[in-house]
Image 1 (tube, helix red, strand yellow):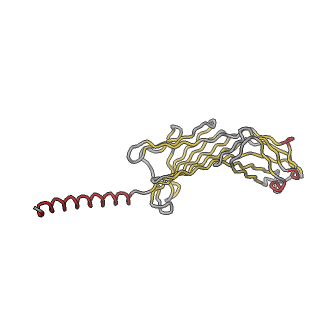
Image 2: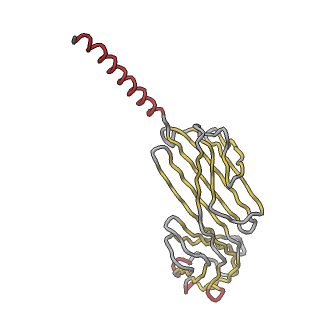
Image 3: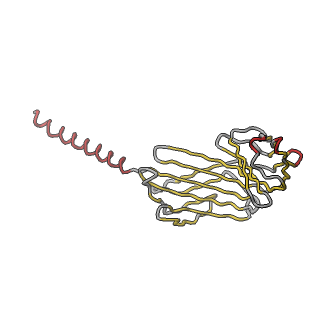
Length: 232
């Protein structure tokens, strides 16, 4: 009786071990997906540019370019696949004469035919102005920016360019509440006196990680330029 029971038990044990082995191999072969989304908007040109890059591998250092049969869509429009190099295949889309609308959404069908999408949003900075329409370096800078709030994952860069095209920048990281900004005299020592062109770049940087994928997403919004007189 024991012999009769032993044989079926061995078969069940063997089958169980075989299934576990196959599952382990399947998990070992499942590689991580690294995704990078980038959106840039130029307010003066009303140009919206979007990039999407996919890599798949055990680590970011060893990952290889990944493409999808149905391609990638941005805001419902097909992106163009460009082989930048042997290590990078990038989907790109440029739209001219458009407004900055959101949320900004990328979507595609994965290898299993399942719909995947990713949305990112950022409030656009409004018009800006300086206190008394000038800057006195020894007093620092007071400025107003409409829609000036910054979340923790957002930042603001103020670009100055003098008549000789010498550039200087001021950086602010969120969080920040309100439309008023102030830079101390020590922060503005690099500014060149005289008439300067100035514009803002608002940025958002997101990182989302899961067991199967890592998504890095960035938005950059370049405002219309203005002019300001800088005094010592």
